[in-house]
Length: 497
Image (cartoon, rainbow, N blue to C red):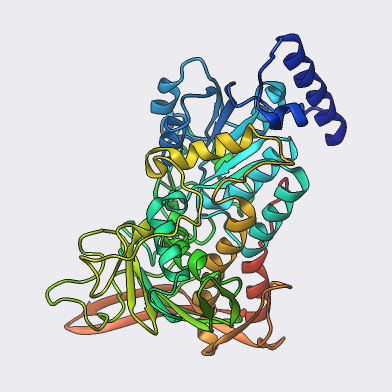
């Protein structure tokens, strides 16, 4: 990449150009926020948006933003990205997002990112330091440290941010929050949540077959900060979620949607401890099914209720919570909503909602739901593109008076820290204890320097002459070093925090 001027000088130059453009256009009626802080795009104008990772969910996100100017697209796999390239034939195409940010710096206002989890941080960090507003798919990052750092960068750079958990902007999310804050189910001390994911293979060992890298894929760029390994079609374009180096499993995929109403309504903050149990854990990929329990302390009162300590339990891979008392026979929460949901157990009642907080109800009040209070700002058509467009709106406002997007990084960062911390509990479960969490310093405090965990590295089973034969191999790992590497990964040479 070419040498660049210091960021503050670069941003100042861009601000001057934009200010001059506003004045030269002879605009006489502009929003007050623009008048009071020149240098921000008037809401009547369009943002120039670039996409990074556009072959999957990113294509849908861009479609919801296509009232703006889609000016550039970057993807490491041009075959997978072709449909999105075809959507925007005038957009310049790249494989390396860094080259795109460098060459098109002055032509890009904002960036939509929907890459595999392990490259969320580096793409967002580089975009934010270049002064670009960032829409970043969930989970926000692959690790706890990356989440913490992105939240800090959002404050330092002042760009508008949004995580792609669209249910956060929905009316149903607001209904759940306002019912709880209004005391409709009393004080909540226990919550269960679940998803039907994974729908991709998990519990996998590293493949050994050799494959040629497709000509349309830049494998080195796909790896990004992850450790080098040979290409295999089991990793991309879709099944990367299973692999610890690239994804965050079912928990990372869905908890940013399903835990979200729990986190927001109960204002959970950080847990003080967590623990997990699961199907077999190996060194390469997330387990097929798991149960993770987080423990949160008492928080400040909210609305009409106190916020006592909460035990929050997550289930995936076909595991589900027990049926709540009072739920009608022949029916299970989530059956009619798909994907999963959450159950809030209050001192006065039980509230259930689906993924994205969809279709919430209180057991026994299905036909007589409580009124909402309209305490929270509503976002039009949140689930049909409103979540993305609320970010566009925020990006056009003066940062000094901006109404931040619903799932901006100041909110999404801590939420995501909780989500991916659950994978610490899963990967360290061989310690056979509840792990005590120092959230401020991002450390598990009850692991000794010399403690070890045994993790399956390969597991073979055959039947010979009617007798089962097992061949399970283990890798013995220093538990404290492992925990630190899961919290803050060591990046491959050429990539940095």
